[in-house]
Length: 114
Image (cartoon, rainbow, N blue to C red; front, side, top):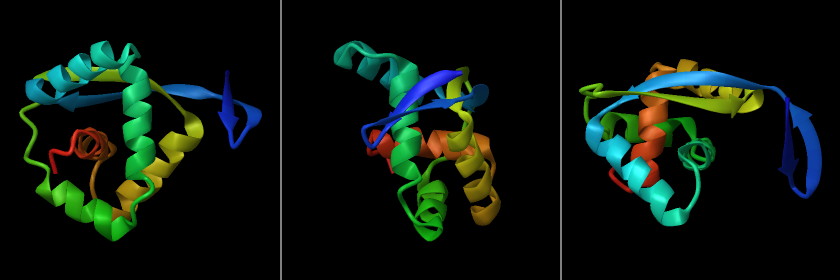
């Protein structure tokens, strides 16, 4: 259980482990940004996913198409709130892609690579 602040209100929410694969260049950008911003990779991934989910399904589909195929050099594990995971699952079904692909697309979009 984790306490999340949403719109100035605190709420308790369960978190779950999500694992996805990404290429080394994306992982290195993630590490570099975490060091530069003095934050965790998890915080950056959560922000990236949150930003991605603000797009429409059509926009996410297009971003996913522009994201190059993954060579899967690294396995990344991150704890995310269950509500965020549920949103990822729903949009993955809608755009007919995997949650794994959406996680990579979120990071690529966050770093303006797509």
